[in-house]
Amino acid sequence: MSITLSSLILCPIWISMAQIQQGGPDEKEKTTALKDLLSRIDLDELMKKDEPPLDFPDTLEGFEYAFNEKGQLRHIKTGEPFVFNYREDLHRWNQKRYEALGEIITKYVYELLEKDCNLKKISIPVDATESEPKSFIFMSEDALTNPQKLMVLIHGSGVVRAGQWARRLIINEDLDSGTQIPFIKRAMDEGYGVIVLNPNENYIEVEKPKIHVQSSSDSSDEPAEKRERKDKVSKETKKRRDFYEKYRNPQREREMMQLYIRENGSPEEHAIYVWDHFIAQSAAENVFFVAHSYGGLAFVELMIQREADVKNKVTAVALTDSVHNVWHQEAGKTIREWMRENCCNWVSSSEPLDTSVESMLPDCPRVSAASCHVVS
Image 1 (cartoon, rainbow, N blue to C red):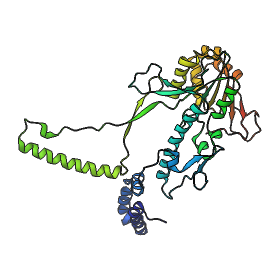
Image 2 (image 1 turned 120 degrees about the horizontal axis):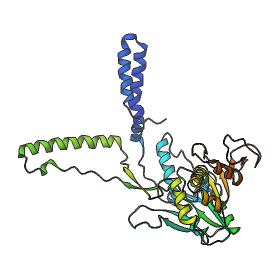
Image 3 (image 1 turned 45 degrees about the vertical axis):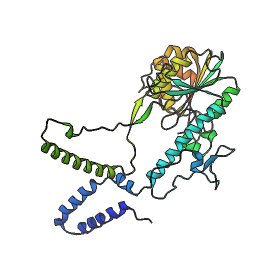
């Protein structure tokens, strides 16, 4: 078992507490003082001191992983599946490594959507200026012109982006289990136009600007002696602040701020925006939705906001483990009736496929997804 800085600091404290607790009531005061000291120690921050640098590759090759012919992620040299616990007892570091790999996989899936599925990447907002934050969706060539059928795919919440159902399944199972690619290819083979939404791409992150404090020496109307004293105090304050920052953020992780994308600042906003600017403008007589988890909630919100248009254009909706709630979302009676006739929610269940599953909500039927992957 490796000895870490945090264990070296905490062990003597725990030993002292144990010794004090063996004493009489006179020792209560010391116990209270030690407990107060422990409460002031931020263990998460303390453990950062033991971490290797958070410096990870930016390509699959750099991680020494690749997808094989079955779409499984495997180590290039050993052929083994992905290992999360790459470094023992360093959960935060392992999680950061996993997230870095996940970002690479997101870009990899985007490439597959364009190269393997022949989808076009469309920037939104459609009237965005060059300098404002932007997002994007993916569409087939005939998405807006196909006169018969259009398929719309909406993933759930979290880290997943356009083309994904679940990052965990992509990494631990295969591309067919964790991406929307099988749905897209089958839909196109059967003559559907396709639109792939990107509801979690709500903002861009930029580094927080550093606040520059004007030096007191710039105040020319102050006496030289007073300015010197102020400068000395300022330097001491900066020295203490830098020392604290080194403790607080030893990895020198950049502090980021979020710039939200106009009219696409949430999954619900995004669904309405794509409806207004693309789906509603499409030539398709019949529109079909496949929505997973929070994507189902986003669809219900779309229906609340655009009820007449949705009823006129949408033929059927397939939900998978949808988290929508017609009561909390205040969906009216006419929406609930339409959902009972036109929607179906496949949910995780040990029952055989398509077996009816009891629902507490008066909306669409719930049926079992059986052994099929209903992603989470």
